[in-house]
Image (cartoon, rainbow, N blue to C red; front, side, top):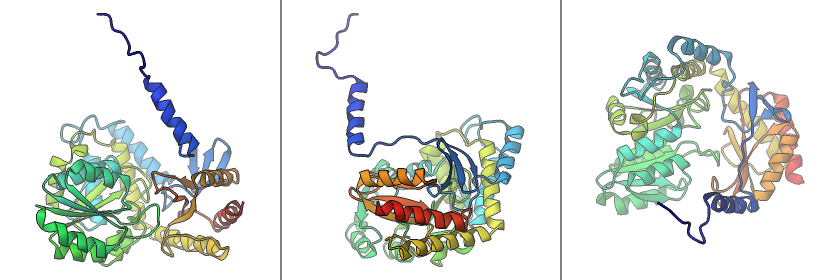
Length: 398
């Protein structure tokens, strides 16, 4: 059979290159930066060593030899991969042990692990809410929460960030028309450094017969009693219906978990598509996660250190006249720059000075809201904190 091309056919690459050119002109193009071996807060880059103030390694566990050794032992014992989805043949003793440890850490009935926080949210939300239901979501929720809400096919009502009066109004107007209602929010908002008003949200959920769904990825391990997160910090541990956390931030490894009732776990392992249809995480990864969780529990000084470091850096910046968003001891310190081109230039200047700082642009943040996202770790030294503060002040003034 002879085929002919349309006379004005645009090739895939030509179309994609045109879009990439637009991103480039708007200073929104992203590229990978190769980061090598990590030594505490110092990483190896193509330009030499740099102090990392951009990662989510809040407790400084990503390079801890105990996690490395646990992963190596598990790989030797169990191999490099799980071999299948966990509902077929990919579930093993390391998965069982990890989920038991998560449940114990958070004093929950049960837990279920996922390959990533993104996978957890795009699997769990559509399992819990469907076409006849309503979701009430914070306007600044993470992309994975937004996508999970979209995939659910539920009616989604978005309330202004942390505005519980607006949330109450939406619940009063729309709750009665829905079979189920789910209030979805981040615990700590990763681009603003602030916390959800969990106490008010739990109260509204009780009043309006709704369920609470809290993504605590940037909180667990750092805030709350023994690092149990945002609800714990509000004195409401155990009062949230569904809580999501990750191992790839405070706990130094990779993957995610959901904890709650044993019924919730059993329901999600049957209905969360990202769990059902994904290969289980490698046993070595599960072993590293268990070790990171154990170290975080056994070494509370890490939580104290990251909060102290955050307060120190914030004080240095504020004293120099820098406007920093977030709570006083928040381990995420956003500095709004506004212009995408300028935030990219500042990020490069900081990298040249030996400091990696996140230069965040749309669509991760709203248009005109480009910012430096400075993250603090328990691994940072006082000299490194002073160094990045000086570099930030200099770069912002240029």
